[in-house]
Length: 290
Image (tube, rainbow, N blue to C red; front, side, top):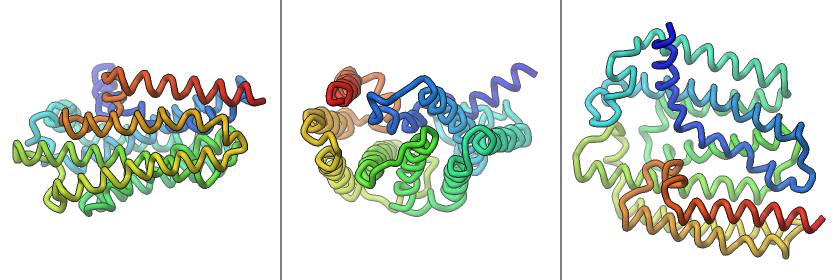
C-alpha cells in the first residue's frame, strides 16, 4: 500500500508544486497588515492548489501516455514506466480534486471554490485540447498562474488591483514562453518531444514572444508601482525586476535553460538572490511606509 502511495505522490509531481507559491503574492503586498490568520489561510490555499495541481498532472500524463513512453526523460514517470496502474492514478486524481474543492467550500468561501474549479477546468481543457494549439497553450499556462494569484487574494480577503493581475499575467507568459523555447530547441536537436504543438512554432517566433513578454513584465510592474498608494517607495524595487528579467533571458538564450523555471529559481544564484532581495525590499518599504 505504502509503495503505491509513493508512486501516486511521484506522479503528482511534488517538485512542481513550487509554482503554487503564486498564492502568496497578494500576501506580500499586504504588509504591514499581515497576521497569523492570513498566513495560515494562505498556507491552506497553497495546500489545496497542490492537491488540484497534482490532479491535473496525473490527467495530463494519462493523456500523454503514448508519447511519454517514448520520451527519454518522461518514460521514467510511474505511469509511463508501468509501475503505477492508470486506473489507480485516475482514482487518486479524482480523490485529490474532491478534497481540494470540498476544502475550499467548507473552510474558505464560494469564491475560492470557483477559483479552484476554474483552475481545474482550464487545465483539463489544456490537457485535452489547448496544449495542441500554438499560442493558446502558452496563454492557458499563464492563466493558471493568474488564477493562483487571485485565489491567494480571495483566501485572505484582499482585493487585487488590475495592474497586479496584469503583472502576474505578463510574468506567467514570459516564463511559459521561455519554457516553450527551451523545449523547441531540444526538439530541434533530438527530434524527440512529447508535445506535437512544437511543429507549430519557430525559433524566431518564440524569440519574439520572449522579447515582447519580457518588456511587458517590466512595464506592467513599473505601472503597478506607480498606481500603488505607496508609489514612490515601491519604485525602488523596479531595478530588481529589470535585472531578474534580463538575467532570465541570458539563461534562456545563452545557457539553453528555462525549461524548468522553478529549478532555475533555486539553481541560479543571481536570480535567487534577486528574488530574495526584491521580497525583503518590498516588505521593508511597505512596513516603513506605514
